[in-house]
Image 1 (cartoon, rainbow, N blue to C red):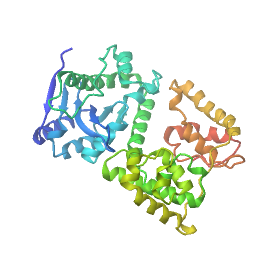
Image 2: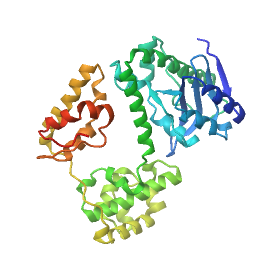
Image 3: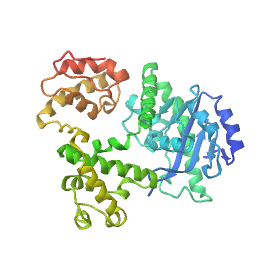
Length: 377
């Protein structure tokens, strides 16, 4: 199909286009980026469409992103995306801003029970009856000039995204449309709640098995790893591998030979940072007990699986009633947090992660299922 394409390759042109886009009810947004050996994504191309034309913005030629940031934050213009978590990182990295309101077509497909976590090609095929080419996702988006295949792929993607929006919106009730935007706002909010390096240890594998003194070492390791990944712009596992964290905190090696023998320890890490890591371990291990983190809760016992199943059934029933993909209803982590708040005898408290329409529709039913009159709001 012939697609109208306009290139945007300077600050003045971008500002003019952004002013025009801000008069529209919605724009479709997409990005192409590279993230092979970096912590942050490197933008190779930004795509915008109003449904009639595909605009391709070359980020290598733009230095003033303020007009685009103003578009992203203009609450009168709905920003349409698909499975956007990494796109959001690109927007934040380039412009310092994130899109609002946000309509994710993958979420919309779930609310219409077309499918959960649907790939873009499958959704386009299902809704628009168009079969997309296999794509250029693994190609080099930082090369110049881009190939004709890359340009066609990028333009077609964003144009069809703009075509999907009115089709999906028409099928959504006002209530469900509001829920899609609500979940979109939560995606943006989640990215804004960047985990502080000092708290990264809470997500480390097997951290709950460690003593408080060992947790102090793990906290120091995870905090350093997070800070270094960001400052070096390298993946976390390039700085220090995930599987090495727990055995280091548990055994607390005091020489390079012992450190090198740690499970999954990369020789490069020992060469480059070994001496510093040994000093870090020593200092954290010797810190006073008053500064140690609190012990982390153990995972729920196997006996809790039956209770989890009953809780999950509440979401399944509600999803069936509303004709929403069941996976969108109650997330496993949310139900586990609810159980951990009072297992086994209660009282239980709804976790902060259960919010909005889910809390209103299912919060009290979950507490009733647990046999408690705990706080539901």
